[in-house]
Image (cartoon, rainbow, N blue to C red; front, side, top):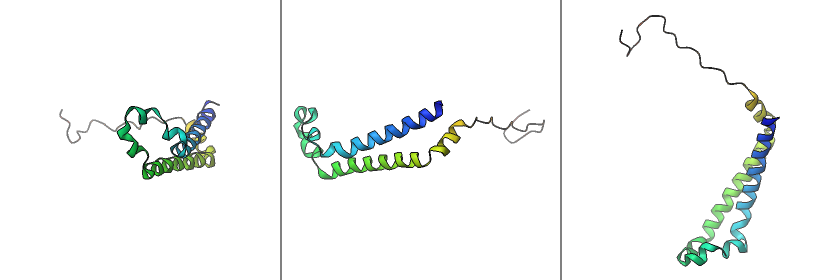
Length: 102
C-alpha cells in the first residue's frame, strides 16, 4: 500500500510541476514578480523568450515523465516491492589474492 502511494505521489508531483513550468513563464505572474522590482537588471534576461521556452520545455519533459510513470505504474510497483538481495559473499578460501599480504 505504501509503495502504491509513493508512486502515485510521484506521478502527481511530476504532473503538477510540469504543468506549473509549462504555464507560469507565459503568465502575468512571471512578468510582475518580486525579482523584477528588486533587481531591474534581470528584466531583460527573465523576459527573454528563449529562456521562457526553455523553462516551458522542461515542463513538457516533466509532463512526459508523469505520463511514462502512469504507463509503467505496475512495473514501478513491482520494482519497489522487491526485497533487496544481499551481495554475494566474496570467496576468500585461504588463497592469497592480489594486493593482500599474509
